[in-house]
Image (cartoon, rainbow, N blue to C red; front, side, top):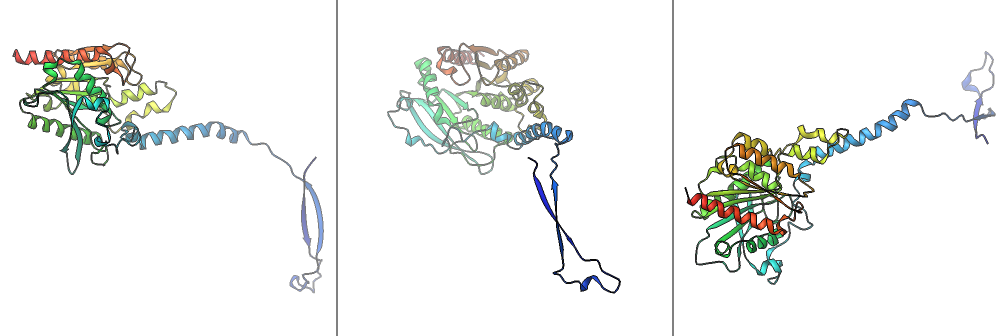
Length: 360
């Protein structure tokens, strides 16, 4: 059935030369109804191409723009898990499994500007309080959570070590800016490096006779590599460095996450603000701590390819140091500390570094 539209035409009466149009009464009209069919037209080829090609291109362009604009919110996630920045040590019951085996003290360390950092000083419950700390492990955390979420890892580490050494050891885990209870401010590579530099300097001042071990996990390991490529990496109290599941650079991680050449996201590397180039740090100015580092990689790491840790190991070896590489069998990115091999490698490295320093 063909739809119809009624169009109305208005006709004024024919006028002779002695009459003007304005004198015609408005009531004098001639109405005629004309019936016309409505003709439907198909969309043009250009419109179809615009819809088929233009919409996905616009969607990809929008996502690329969002990845660039919000890249730091993707790289640093202090808001995860939910309420991570609102949790308190006092809310953890004393009989909670990690806490009842640990002696935990909250610490506050000033950083650059008006930034104040919150952290934990963790020792085993049966530590020798009458004697000073001999070994202190400064922990560089990953890109989410807080030191409270690492208490199980710290307890496992203490349980894996020899009691004579563990009893005089401590772990200093301080959250960088915008994480946990530290000052809420914008997170940048420069800011995080400044925070951990102040944390290390605080450790050297507070424990002048202790052997300091820097231990970083995931992005924390890459931060440690970038920071220790400075003169701070040759500090006489810095005994060694342990890098667990480090990545070589932010650009390499982008390529790892988006390996397909047909996706536009992998080409956004030039727009990354915080490059975290650990490869360049080790090649340009490898410190003694980095040349002698222990690099741990998880065999089945689902986040950071283990090949990145291996590459950093070979770079450190070429620097003339005594770097070591250990692959934690069967481990994923976050659960390597559950494997007995993890604790054994950790303490074997610390004991070996102490012997090397004492033998000099």
